[in-house]
Length: 339
Image (cartoon, rainbow, N blue to C red; front, side, top):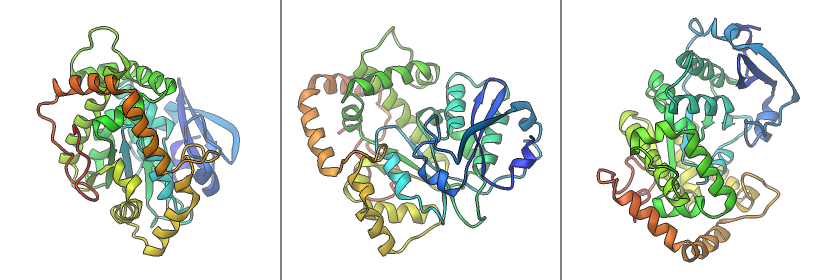
């Protein structure tokens, strides 16, 4: 299999790199729509994947035509990105790709100073992620945390691409990350995985860090990455997660507009009235809405008061140049970062 044979359709999806092999799954519109994530949780049309040598695909990457612009959702994790990406998913009108695992792999490489053929692999990923079923429809890619370490590699080739930078202020981020043992394990794991890139922006770690400090450091790293990207790319917009949760209709309307796919008020109303906003977006089997989120947040503020203070103190000692709010909000004024 060569790259040219894959360019005509998104039906063969490059899911991951496995050493010297590329792993591909057979997909269709329905498979993309039902795959809440495109990592190991993918629900392909056919789960019997195939392999092809990565060098065979890279051999054609330099001659491959540039993809049409891709719309990106960059985010800091646990801040509503899955809800946003699913709300923007109109199966017959666009193609929404939620957390492509190849981008995560490349993001980890980027945080660790790249690797063999890094930029060519990024171009391969962009070319294949940019395929669409009809040329007029947008492709929307929701990234994940490691991808924040390679924003420039994705955006620089077409700097006019639209992008949303979804985020929390520090306190809400700490509440989201410290709320359970699973989330605490996640922040320690990803902080170790991305340590060189994190330390490049926020200074060296002095041994193992507590969970609130690790979370605070990761938050500050990503705010610095987002500040730089918002300054660099004309169609980049910041988005407060609170705005998405509290006022989803204007947020969705503005996001569709930014991504070149404006929708009627009736369509927006139907999306917000659907069970998407009353279910846990990562696992729709569970009921979860904004009122429950607020109730949980207020309870956690009391339970985690000491750890919140530790995280705030760490950031305030190191964030002298950080803006009060991220620039270029999609709607409203944006979140207060250090309120």
